[in-house]
Length: 303
Image (cartoon, rainbow, N blue to C red; front, side, top):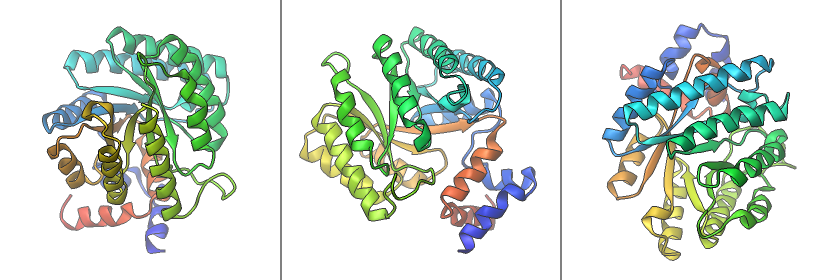
C-alpha cells in the first residue's frame, strides 16, 4: 500500500525530483545520451532496442515530428555502430486518430531501418489498440517480412489465439519475430488474467507455442521464475541459441541481465529516451509499484 501511495503521488511532484527517481531507467532526453547508454550496454555484451518516449498523441501533426525523430535516430545509431534495433509505439504516430497516417509514418521508419538491414519492433499497447496494431503489423510484414516484428502480452486472454492466427504468415525463409512480455496496462478481468501465477502459466504456454512453431521470441521478462521456465523450454525443445533472445528494460535487474549474458544467451535491453520521459516514468511506477523499493534503495545508497 505504501508503494502504491508513493507511486501515485509522483506525477504531482516537481520534474527534477522525479528525474532523480527515474534516471536509472531512462537514457536521457537526447540522441547523444541514448547513444552513450547503448555503447555501454554493447560493451557489456548486450544488444539494444531504442525507443523514443511518447505515446497517445492528441494532435496528428505531432506524428510527422515523431517520424522525423525516428529517422534521425536510426541514422545516428547506425553511424555510431550501435548493435541494436528500434521499437515504436503506434499511438505516437496517431493510431487512434488516423490509422492510414500512422501506417504511412511507421512505414517510412521501416523503410529507413530496412535500408540498413535493420529491424523495427511494433510495440503492443492497451487492449483498445490490439486489433489495429495486428492489422498494422500484417500490412508491414507483407512488404518487409525481415524487418518488422510485433509484441504480445501474455496476460491478455486473446493472446494465444492471436499467435495461432498469425502463424500463417510464417515461411522457412521469413520466420516471425515476436516479443513476449507479461503486459503492463491496467485491464479488467474479462480482458486480462489478473493473478501472478496465472499470467506466468500463460506466458510459458505462449512461449512453448512459439518454440514449437519456429517463431523467434524475444523473451521479455525480469521474473526469475519465467527466465528459468524459458531456459527449461529451450532445453526441452532443443532450440538453437540463434533462434531466441532474452529482453529486459534498461536499469531493471542488471544482475540477472549479466548472468544471462555470461551464460551465453543473447540479451537485448530496451533503452527509452526523449523529452517525454516524465509520463513514461510516472506511468511505469504506477503500473509496477514494486519499483519504488528499488528507487528508495538507490536514494539511500546515493544512486
